[in-house]
Length: 449
Image (tube, rainbow, N blue to C red; front, side):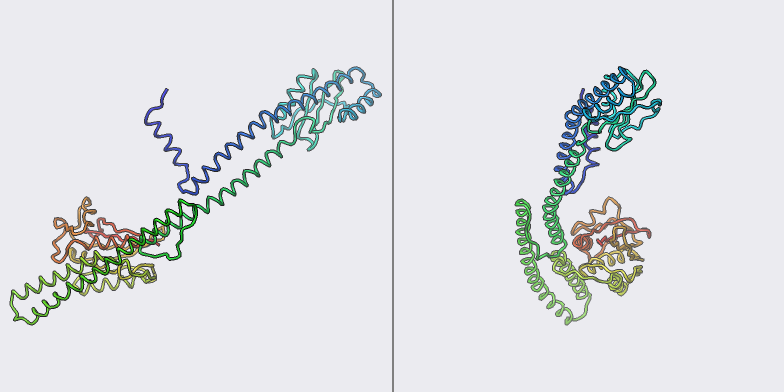
């Protein structure tokens, strides 16, 4: 009978929930689980076959000796005969015999290994017709066995524990446990060393993605890990060479474009004032702003070093610039909060967001809060028309302006949000949009701790 399709999928998912997610944990599970299963199987076979067989034979032999002692006592229960029987049993069988005038105990203290009691009980039941009682826990090294005789006497036999069952089984289990522990320790050391190489590679790749450099990173570990690390270094070198070439090209383009723009601005400044001249100045100013945004988007801020800065002070500079431009902006931030960022890059991203909010809304609120994970969130809220939730991701596309949801920004070219998100992700964080409590748009910059 085959399982339903839904059940076939459900069972592996339930199992996966309990499996480790890290490479170290999974590698350890691959090694430890088979070893543990093998050890359990060996232990089970040992106890179920060898140990049980030996214990059964020992218990059967001891029960036979006790039956012989009981028969000899019944044949002649006189004191001289009992004394001779006790001496023969001690010399030949290693049994200590005593005769009491008591009844059998009512209770028995079971052993931790119930199989020991069951085996001995079965053997005594097969060899004795008289009522009996025994205890494997009363004395550490001995077994106490008592047989009720027909004349009312209680025959007490003390036998060495080794005569009842194999006492060396725990030593086997102990050595098995020690071997398992040593194998596990060796596996942990070797796996940890291999995983550490992968972790260092991942850390170097993550740092390079954020614009940081780790010059001390060197490939090590297993051959496959070293190959991956060498491929990463080669890729890093190619990307860095491309960035350097692009930076040099952009510097040249910036110089070549700004030179004629400067000449045009100078000629317009010297020209006779007129309405046409003012229109040309506005077009020239818009062209200069567009070139600045194009170059900023293409250049990025990857070459800037990371610094520990006071976040409130950095945001205050951005807010002051927006206020000077005519915006109504308020700031709420902890003055003592410091973060490791690229200051100019973050300042440019915040300026884009704050100025965008100031253009589309009358009031702008900037606030800072910490996250439970130790990171920081910068919130920019405005009371403008906002953006429909289904267009949030479209707003981050380069050269995209959502004029239907927001008023037309004549100077904008649709790169402000794209640049801001690029900066946030370059710091290992992100930029998202949401509905603002003021009724407009909320921009959230998340930075890691």
